[in-house]
Each structure stands twice: as structure tokens, then as C-alpha cells.
Image 1 (cartoon, helix red, strand yellow):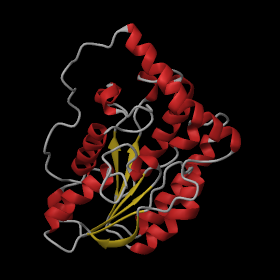
Image 2 (cartoon, rainbow, N blue to C red):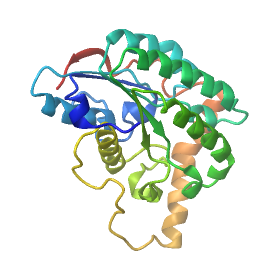
Image 3 (spheres, helix red, strand yellow):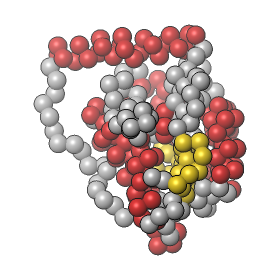
Image 4 (cartoon, rainbow, N blue to C red):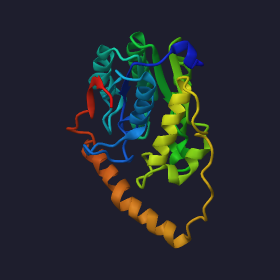
Length: 263
């Protein structure tokens, strides 16, 4: 679906649903100790355009699987009645061995149906392509492509738009990613926010697809040191959580559970 800003008019409220991507992991840390994230950045621009009275809720929690998003966030989000609703989920599922991608699609479709029914516009995402930047990313690419096709099918419905990140080569740049290589850096969040805003009909402020200025590649010793640090600080703990059946989001509450004035 193509969206015109003139056709929709200003949004007066926004509700964000999902996992760490939408919570804002690894963006700037705000005064309340929470991450900022692309969704906060979108809300800031929409609030400025609304000229007062804008409301925003963010129910996303890191580590959540699509079933948990459906069970813990979707009904709550639908009840808030936000005009603009964003939904990103399923990537945590497909990163796990043995993922049933058809079940993930079914749950994502259930979530999208509930959220779209009460919103002026529902925003979905085609995730970035991990095979171009991550060792082992090709293993999960078939599931990601299946999810991508399903999201495209959902976007054929009125009132649904997709933010296309998959084909944007700027996300191959490691500077758009945090040290853990799974979450966006502040620059990555800034670009996703701009992509969302343009997808919902806002006038562009910059070319979010443009490559960053080139820099000399790190030397072999630096790459090895970075890889060893990543293994110890990030991959190892992630694997241990999978073995234990725990999640980084266990016991966490959403950072903005109510649809309240923003900022």
C-alpha cells in the first residue's frame, strides 16, 4: 500500500508492538534508563507535526517470540485505539533452530488482523537481510524470505503498509549495528525511523538508504579481537539463554504501557 500524507492527515496517536527491535535496544539511553529507539523517534516527529495532544504507547519487550507478542501485547494494543500501529515480530523465532515458520506466519497474521481492525494505519516490516553481514545468516534466510512473502501478502490489504529494509544495502554496514551484531546502533535506529516516517507519508528529511562515508576496513588483528569480544559478551550468553529456556525480556515490563501524551 502507498500512503499519502495529505490523504491521511496528521496522526494523533501511535502504539508500537514487538520485541527488542521496537523497544529500541542499543539506541541512546534516556534519562529514565530506557533506550530511545526508532519508535520513539517516529513518535517525536509525529508529535511535533500534531502540534499538541499526541499520545504514544510502546508495548515492545526484548526477547519476545511472536506467540508471546500475540498473548501479551496484541489485545492490549488493540484496546488502546491508536491511530498508527506498528508491528514487528517473528525474527526471534526464525533465529532458533527448528522454527516452524508457517506457525510464525499464522500468529503474525492473527496479530496483524486484530491490530489493523482498529487502526487508521498498520505498519509492518521486511527485516534486513542477515545473510549479507552475519556468519551463518544464510541458514535462516529461507525462513526470513518466507516471512517476507507473507508480510507482503498482508500489505495487500487496505490500511497496511510495509517498511522495506531487506533490500537496503546500507544495513550491510556494521556501523548501523551495535556491538552485539543483532541490534541496531543509534544510526541504525535513526534510519529505520526515517524509513517508517516516509512509509506513512511524511516528507523525507534525508535519504535513509544512502551509504555512510567510507572508512578504512579494520585490520586482521582488530577483526579477531572484535570477534573474540563478541563471542564472550554476546554469543555465549545468548546460547546459554537458549539452553536454559530463558529470555533477556523475562520479568521486564513495557517502557510505555499506556497511551499517554508524548513527549
